[in-house]
Amino acid sequence: MGTEHATELTVLAPEDFDRWWDGVVRAFGGGPASAEERELDRSLTEFDRTLAVRDGDEFVGTAGAFSFRMTVPGGAAVPTAGVTMVSVAATHRRRGVLTSMMRRLLDDAHAKGEPLAALHASEPAIYGRFGYGAATFQINAEIDTARVALALPEGTDAVRVRYAPPADALKECEAVYAALVPGRPGMLARQPGWERAGLLDPEDRREGASVLQCVVAERDGEVTGYARFRTKTGWGPSGHDGTVTLEDLAALDPASEGALWRFLFGIDLMTTLALHGRPVDEAWQHLVSDIRRCRPRLRDAGYVRLVDVGTALAARAYPVPVDVVFEVADAFCPWNEGRWRLTGDAKGASCERTRDPADVALSVRELGAAYLGGTALLSLAAAGRARELRPGALTEASVAFGSPAAPWLSHGF
Image 1 (cartoon, rainbow, N blue to C red):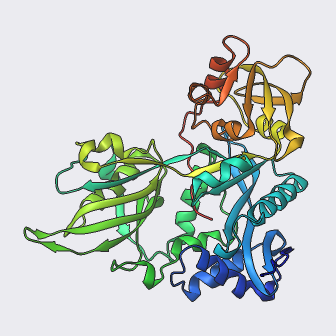
Image 2 (cartoon, rainbow, N blue to C red):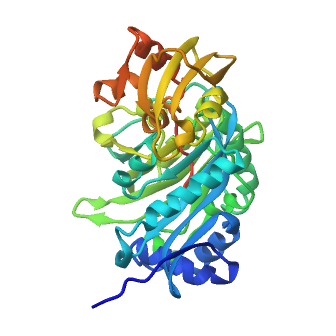
Image 3 (spheres, rainbow, N blue to C red):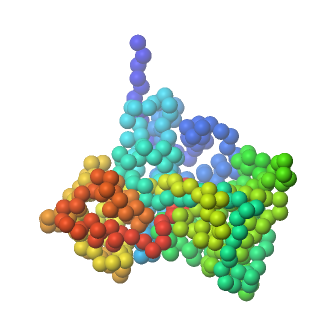
């Protein structure tokens, strides 16, 4: 008769990183991982926020958090726990390993005063029970550049596009990215060291494509945009049939963005431009001559959890005035349970506990989904996930929770 060992949750020691990281790689499919990736992950790891569950000498659970600042509607940068590297060994499922790690991560974030937590979900069904809601979405596409034309913005011809080695152009590209962060909810201010993630170029991840390439857009000698991409040649019965895979693109103005798209559409011997993880409201969808030949596909992206309901709701602005009492359910973080009165407008907000009657009842998961403005409270109510207790309150709150720009969780972690 077998004996089940007790597991132990600990903070990861630096000297155990390699064995811990091997456990992460195994849990996410066990594919090869380059020394470059390993060393970057080691350098970015916040060991005091990185968890390991042990069974004897074996790592059977992994999780961690990064200290980020996320843009929320109104432009504020709010401290956010970026939850990452979550895995449980297949030998230790359904033993409470995941729950213990989620418990510790959220307790730690609350103690640090981080009102938000966010993650990319490899398996979305897992995280709703811990209060995370699907808050950002993304567009993937394969554009038939041989048959789709572009209608370019005025001024595009005044923009110069030139090749630049990715590492050499890094400073200028990061300046473009930083300038865009306050304008789109969900974007993360790049912490020191994270700029290197965009330059990772392990050969085993290229799948036969080229090394990472980069072009920059310039106006009056200043860099106003960039694109990082790979090319993969291909030949069919009718001739060349290559693919450009876009890794990253950012621009400060429509003309610069248009110039970058024109360049990507026009690379010799390429007939497809593959886009992954782009904002759902990105301009290219309105520049193309035939959106159907772009094969756009919507999918979930970033999941957000309100760690502190009052602080989180007060941290963002609201495009129209709002005065609503939420009845919040949060079994996993009971300090959020109860009624909260939110009052605010485009200039700011406050959110305090109240004994006043509730206007809208919902769980913290739904608040997370709606928080950045990408999911309408009315839509959640239509699915039975929010209840209106005062006539008209849901419409008022749904409009107030909107955002002029679609939220986008801008880089992986």
